[in-house]
Length: 72
Image (cartoon, rainbow, N blue to C red):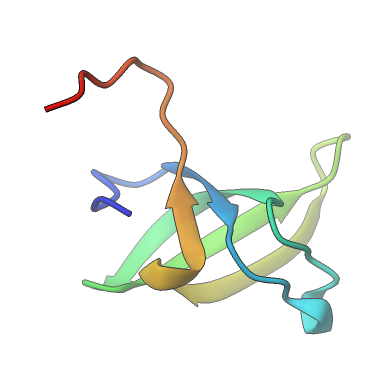
């Protein structure tokens, strides 16, 4: 995953987190950069209510792109 540029990046989980009732591909929002490889994320339900807030490592996340990225 590339570096999340700024806060509020949208990501998907690459691993299950059963202790938080989250599964692979669950979409979340980066709300804070805690260290170069650790982010605080918030996961919402379809009504916008928080279902989990947790710290995750960059290796557990896939940055989702909203704009096309040209192949190098």
